[in-house]
Image (tube, rainbow, N blue to C red; front, top):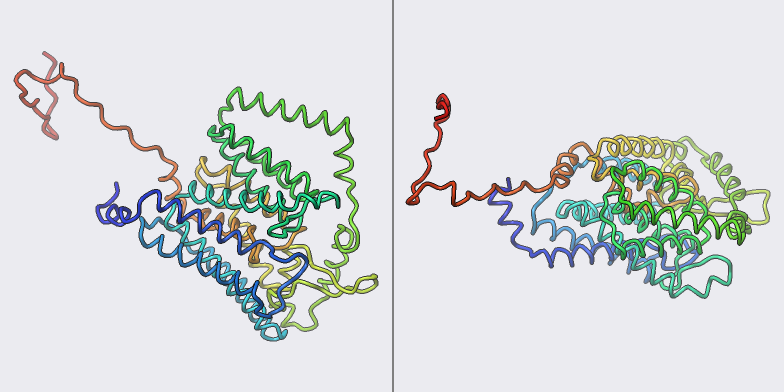
Amino acid sequence: MTSPASAQVGARRSPGQGSAVRLVVALLLVACTVGWRRGQYFAGSLDPVVVAKGGLSGLALALAFFAAQSGVRRRLGTGSAWMLGLVLGSSILGALVHGTLMASGLVAVRVAVLAAAVFFLLRGTGVREVFSSFALACGSIGLVAAVTGASTLSSGRLQGGIPPLSPNELALLASIVVVYVAWRAVMGDVTLLLAAVGAAGLGIIWFTGSRTALLMLLAALLAMGLHVRRARAGFVAGGLVLAGVGAIVALTTGVLSGFLERNGTGVSTLESRFIAWDAASTWADSTWQLVFGGGLSVKIIEVEGQWWNEQPLDSSWVSLLVQTGVLGLVAAAVWVLWVLRGVLHAPLEYRALFLGLWVFLVGRSFVESGLFDATPAFLAFFALSLLAEGRTRARLREEARPAAAPAPAQRPSDAPAGGAQLPQPVPGAPALPPS
């Protein structure tokens, strides 16, 4: 039962205002975490792009904080904040000796600001509403980027125009939308509009040529499909028809083989990533760097024996080893497994969504960077981590529990004549025998 105090607090903000603020916060968070410049990494200089992104993330935090204070404050755990603090703290200690304290400190502060914004957003809003806004934000920005970058299809892979997203970034946004649509379908709440949105998301992923995103998305959808309780006939028939048409097109046109055999050049191939990962294993030149890394701003590593001299790490876990050392890597691994444990204990209504996100984000992180950086992947993972905590699960059960049905009204025929009140039984008194 809602207390009068909490009801009074929740009455300060109308549902329409809450939805608008929530969507604005989600748009700001996604907009300030996607790439604004293709192929460039932050090196510590405060240029206009860095300042603008910092301003948007600060605005998102302010809006989320005041929205949480003006509404009902929902229960939320804090263990995820401690785990993130351990990872960020290790990177700061490493940057202190490596000489990247200014750049890495700014990145750490930015990640902390984003985490705080996600925390307050979940503190004042329900799970379904938050993920709906986040999926809408990812879909809107991804759609604009795909439409404005349609001319890049001539190069073989779809890239973003405005903003200039890389193919993998664009595939990430589309995959989050598809996972959300799949969750609605699993819960039997999908509409024709949502189905069309999901199909558009799959099309964007295909044209980006991102094999990692597609493979991890299929694994996530399979994990989510195991939670289907009673599939509707239309849903099953539509899925079978879509799968059949897709198989026929793939086998008769050769697009599947072309997609799987897509050739990259230079540092974009999987083989080149192994070269960077091997260099990362011997990157530290002191025990301090081995334990604490070199800071979150270290995203490029020098390589030897190739016609190129340096390349990006392209793995969240290899990046952690270089940026946060062994301490941060072990802490992040424990964190991810702890989140999985919480996901498996989440209420059934949310378990499909949480498990699908976990499979996609963690599976993708092995060959893509950004799970513990200022990216949309981090936003989704930190939200998932907060909701998977034991202290939050009671709230999830309350949100998933359907509202109690109102007591049936007394029929006129049951009322005594003259409007007299029926006698009420006395607690503890013996029942009267039937007349």
